Amino acid sequence: MIDLRRRSGLNNKKDPVETKRHTAACAGKVSLAAAQQAIVTDCLVTMVKRG
Image 1 (tube, one colour):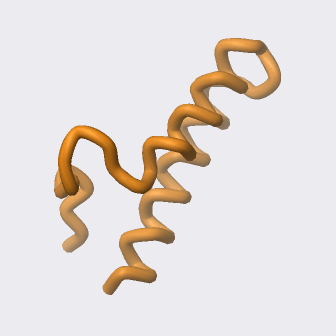
Image 2: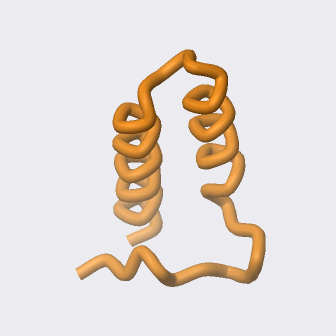
């Protein structure tokens, strides 16, 4: 099982992805649901690549 809570400190490698999605959702460029799904997908892909 992948532990999504595992972090490498306050700032972690997925922060830029989260920020980009957050900004797009707040600007009305994407729906909140789409932004959340993209964050989850990006996070899971990163975790799988790390092994």
